Amino acid sequence: MFAIFRKLGWFFKMRWKTYSLAIGGLIACAILSAMIPLIIGRLVDQMAQGTISWDGLIQQTGFLLAIGVSMYGLRYMWRSNLFGNSTLLEAIMRNRLFSHFTKMDQKFYNDYRTGDLMAHATNDLAALRFVAGGGIMTLVDSLFITLFTLLSMFFLIDWQLTLVTILPFPLLIFVARYLGQLINKHFHGSLQSFSKMNDHVQESVSGMKVIKAFGEEEEDYQDFVKETENVVEKNRKVYLIDSAYTPVIDVITGLTYVLTIAFGTYFVQNGRISIGQLIAYFSYLGNMTWPLLAVGRLVNTMERGNVSYDRVTDLLSVNAKVENASDAVSGLAYHDLAVNIESFSYPDSDAVILEHVDFKLTANQTLGIVGRTGSGKSSLFSLLVRNFDIEDGQILIDGQPIAQIDLTELNDRVGYISQNNLLFSTTVRDNIRFGRPDMTQAEVERFAKLADVHEDILDFAQGYDTLVGERGVSLSGGQKQRIAIARTLAMEPQILIMDDALSAVDAKTEQRILANLKAFRTQGITIIATHRISSIMHADEILVLDKGRVSERGDHAALLDQAGWYDNMFTQQQLEEKLSESGEANE
Image (cartoon, rainbow, N blue to C red):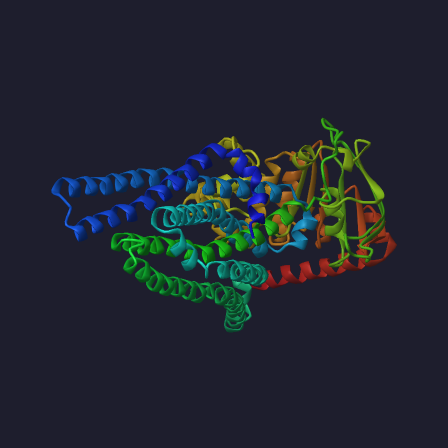
């Protein structure tokens, strides 16, 4: 149960001064609380004997008042230090977790769902905060209240009466140990169920348009109800076990009071103790109620914290498969790109995704890539931006293996635009200058014009100050894609990769954007994957991918001469374009 304190030892050492103040305040409060029953018992004896005086009454009352004021100050001290530390621990762990997230590669995010990661960053860290705050408070407070209360009962009242009346207490130790093990087991399941429910909420909110489009609102709601019921059921088991403490405590407290009434009355009648001492003893028993109740709370808090800490540390122990090399190279010109992929499979999969793919590009050259859906285009780009490392083959930039290039520089100099780009819940301006926050308005507009989205932005109610909404929900698909293109162009990457990045815009807009790119990128390498042959017909080389292999290659004219898939697709698209133009003319 107390293993969590050992695991958090690094934090307690770091904050030992403030924890010492907090624990000192708790101990002082426990000592002062042990004095109150004695003062009350003495007053009762003086009243019973008729020896009490106004001066004595005022003096004893003054003592009680002084104790109350002192405990107020001490409680303020320990609470501010203790709970301040617990909040700091949560902040430290949250920063570590978020920093870890930013360093993880694509495989990590394939293995862990967003809702699960959110549960680690919320519920698990909250459980650690309870340990570092309420857990320490409950442990120290209950321990020293119990200690000083028992010492006072033993030495200041009667040691025989104390020994007899605390006989039921050891029962609580065995019960706490047994129930603690059960809580640990079931709480782990409750956290997993919460993570699963979190996943459902995150996916449903993100995909609400799709859910509504298919009329699946009720079905999705019913699935969520089942997830919620599972969370309730898992937590119900935890609370059923936790609730077992109270009946045990009631039994122990009841037995203690029965023994105290029986033996205490006997000792009073025999003159061993006074009536005031018996009343003080009952007051001490009242003080023992909190430590007994605290045992259940403490076990619950410790076991929850123990499970949560293990979950968080397990997550933090996951190492990225793609890491920066210790001798990473930087300062490259990014003028030459050579790709030679013999074979590539995703981690934990035996399926070959890419095989025998090779090409070379130099500054101011453009490569076009076409192929059916699932032909391997996006997988190829994942390797070029080093989301995954290749084992059988190599990718060279200026003659350097991509795995040896500094990751930060690689991310800055290689720009990747996919067909599904995430926009942040801020203004259009801040989305465009995301990678360069210090960009001027003129620079922002320059890149917006290159992406052919400037006029659209001016039509927005707030122009460049328009809030795009979460994930760009307030924008059309074409507007989101073009803003994402402007954001990437603003980084002025030497290698630009466009993965069907113009799928949501019409052919004429696409042609304008490509013409802008050609004029703007006079020294850069450009790679374009698209379903529109017209978008890449002027590329220096075009690859046709089929099931991860290069089935055709060459420039536009050479591919047409091969009379293969490329020629067939180009003919179909030309026919579709003519039919579309004919339809528009008839209208």
